[in-house]
Image (cartoon, rainbow, N blue to C red):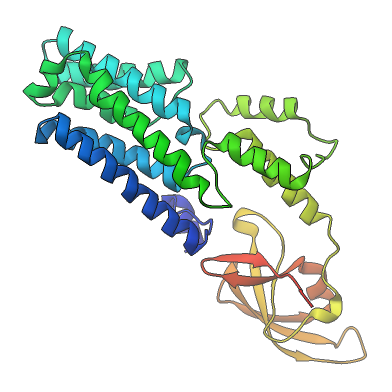
Amino acid sequence: MIKLYSIIGVEQASVSHAERIASLVGGFVSILFIYEICQRTLDAPTAAVIIASMGSSAVLIFAVPHGPLSQPWPVFGGHLVSALIGVTCSQYVPNEILAASLAVGLAIGAMYYLRCIHPPGGATALGAVIGSQATHALGYQFVLTPVMLNVTIILLVGVLFNYMFSWRRYPVYLHRLKMQKEAGAMPARPSSISHENFVYALSQIDSFIDVNEHDLMRIYDIATKKSQEPAFDPMELVIGGCYSNGEYGQDWSVRQIVDESPNEDPDKDMVVYKTVAGRGRRNSGYSSRTEFLRWAKHRVIRDEDNWKRFENRS
């Protein structure tokens, strides 16, 4: 099942219910404001096109507030540049099919070169071409109202709404300032990697990555710090406990101890286990306690759809 999830791209990261609810409410509030403005300034068909575009932006700003595609410049620049291109194609390319296709293609290229990639911008460019007669009659005014006005509103709502929650800020720059203030200083990074080397590594992938380098470095710092912590005490092997081999990808596995046969002789001190996740799932087996300890790297617990390292708070 895990391999199938990887193939079809099911997100495995877990977020809290509070985060999900905050995203839901943020999207509701932002579109409520935008819908009112669209209804007052545009006819119903055009309003529907623009609201659809802004609805996509709302998903990014309120569900992924720290992502590169959600930041103010991609949102503002992506929509305005795309609107400008869309209106131009609508006015100067007589064939609507060609104009629509050209508008979206040119918008993608322009967003790339201007470093403001924002997927909903493609919908804005398309809306300028396939919109109603009222949209076409606006001409380049379409770029200012309703596009720029709506973008400004959703950005303001994004900043104010996300600021109400201590674990998120918008734009992400405010989040980094908050983290620095709480920590006193950015955590020291291992000498094996520098900012310059990290940026170089990202450039070698030669594809847009929807996570900023600061968050990647923070993940690296946390993971490195965690890996330096001592392994669990061998005496913590308990019946019902789950343990991971610490591997990656298809080699990762979690075993649960279901029985044991203690013995003073290390070769006869046995544990019985079943594999509950990852490689060999649903298989059972047994081994000496010493062999199991050699295989196991962490004790883990199930948290919703994910396995997390067990933290002994006692």
